[in-house]
Amino acid sequence: MRQTFLSLAKSSSQRVQVTTVIKPDNTALWAYRYFRTLQQHNNPILTKEYRQLPDDSQFIEKHYHNLRHYRDLVCGVGGQYEDIGDISELFLRLSKHVPIKDKRNPFWEKQLEQYNQFVTDLVATLRLNGGHLFV
Image (cartoon, rainbow, N blue to C red):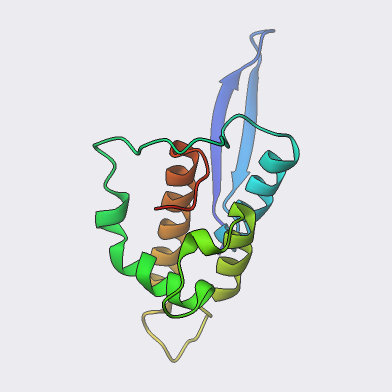
């Protein structure tokens, strides 16, 4: 499921530059590559100190059931996200649990949409808290 979004930006020479952003088929695999690149370049988004999420962050309330469901899948029942230890490893593990296209399941598109929204919101949350898996 690829979607193409167009954004327009003016460059310094006042020409209009068109940028095409392709939504990846597997958002978790994209997030794995993204955070791995940040780690390799010692990007300041990832800090040694935990940063508190903003008060208006509704991530945990919005995705409480997804957090528990995927925690059991990627960490084992009773495991914790922080046991993984590496943010890119978390997304690599999540990438193996993309809802599979199944024409017999009328809800697979909705499940895929929810999965992608969860992963996208998880990326934003981990950027806000410095990349710490303590959610």
